Length: 457
Image (cartoon, rainbow, N blue to C red; front, side):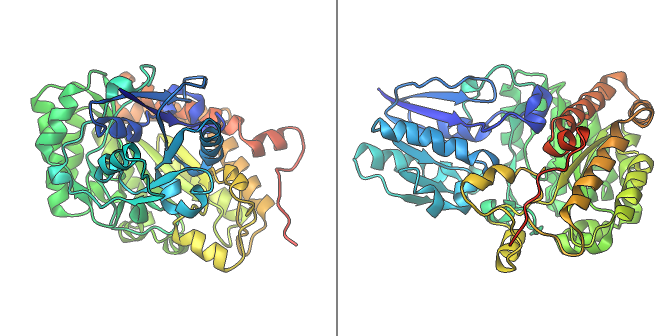
């Protein structure tokens, strides 16, 4: 029996990876294992928990994210030096296949399940091709189950995916290019049957937007919510959704009844001009003035709201950061993810920054390590980089300083009506606080220095 070794590389444990609450299992690798024929012995090495130790294998598969791609290439070099073929998949190499082929034997572009059996057949025949372009799968007929038995048991969250693709094209996001602009959905029955197999109490639904973007997709989500309740799953679960979910308040009610404890929403900005520049059309349609109404609707049903915001846009100012900080306290949002605008491979933003010569770190692949949402890797117009770092430090300091932090926590407890649900709010806040305290810019400011600044010549 041949041995397939799958590796989840982690270049540097920082940010959200510092806590189990902020870490999610590599479900993509579990899908690869699930699509592998039974005549292969499959093992997953997960550097979120495992200290890497070399193991013999006939074939190695490695996942890829931009921030950890150098670690992925390092592991690939180790196995290739010993004569072992290495295949890489995932979002980074799907956007940068030609770069990856300098370091691996083959690249799978897109969804691995559609081509994996052909990849293995070619490998066994000694005719492995450099590139495999997977078709976008019809998820209504999708029958591959991930090998959860191979995932590390220490994850707090157990993961499931029910849809792929996104019809929007936010300029900072590569999901629509990676998974397509069609919103492809598994049937509710398929989703519920898989959920019934998951033993853990805490569940995260990894879809970029579980509820979707059309009346039909909203109805599908409601069938799933009702099914979770009727089957008595009794899960405490987490989802990502768009700001417009509250347009159908019944969907929020049903989600809460089925055990939804947390929603993650990309608010991104409180400035309409910035939302337009980011391509965040759904937020513009709802309107910044209605953000608090959205939050209040989730709170009505006791759901913790994690709000994502981005800074580092053109023409931001200290006055904007002061305004944003005040908005944070007024908004009622329970947990804040505040990141720096980062042009990732495959995004419209990356194309724009490259064409305008505004990227500050271009020694690739080495510089990909800075493309992790905490570094300014591009030159914004109308604002200097130090101002952005100072703005980030101001926002985080105000979020986590005494007495504001304690005030936010008490307010969250009151809003979600439950100590059990509040624990998720507390753990989320502590996760993001720890990420801030470990950030390069905070540590620099703490000792009276400036964060690393790239000066273009």
